[in-house]
Image (cartoon, rainbow, N blue to C red; front, side, top):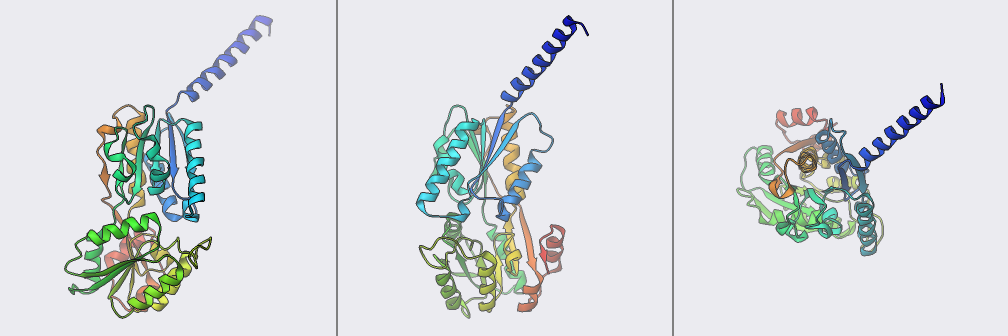
Length: 340
């Protein structure tokens, strides 16, 4: 190979490398910002929905950041999580932040309301978007997580043989999402049944006390969040969720009904939860519309959850000797949410 040919080959490789670097530097950038971590099943399932929504796309750069706020709740830790996540935003300079669950909005998203170069797509938001300034923002859209109370009421009626006047209670941990769900439950019309109360337990001792108080007074106990229960107030670390559910089902003389799909994995008899797949997939498609230039965030209406998933624990059904319609078991098995 002569000198001229070697020079031409070198120029070709340099130009090709420069083109690749330029294309990568100018690809649209999407930051998926999770409030929690992948050890939380909800986060894994939302991520699966996001992957479905982004399937077949290679023209963008995607990065993920997990804030891990399910593992702590003290103010210094939340402040550090906020600073680290905002640094990730500044370093990556995304065109769109896909922010999942309320802490991602509270600790990060609200700082980028009406940012000239960043759009926000939220998912898994239990609270009021106005709390984060999203109601007046021109660069925000997303999908709300709203517990499927009408579906839960129908399920409870079917489990009780269409009996009216069931007495229900809702018990939650003090997590941000739990407090939002409690507010929503209090505003729901539970007729023809009666919601005797919504309660927040700040630690495992208070959770146990409330379960004992409710035993014998209600027909069904509703739960959703119990992953942020310290053994005592002020103590770092939380009681394992399966330990909480095992104790609850052992001391509650009526069925425990979950409002998150993964509650039955922990031991709740039946669960009717918002579809995490819908949350992730819908948000991902909104982000694609923005990144492709098809629509701006302001032109995409905010949506609310419309799909839910049923899960079931067969051992809990046998314990309470409840007749569960076969369609529920079929649904749970079809979605891999049936537990022996």
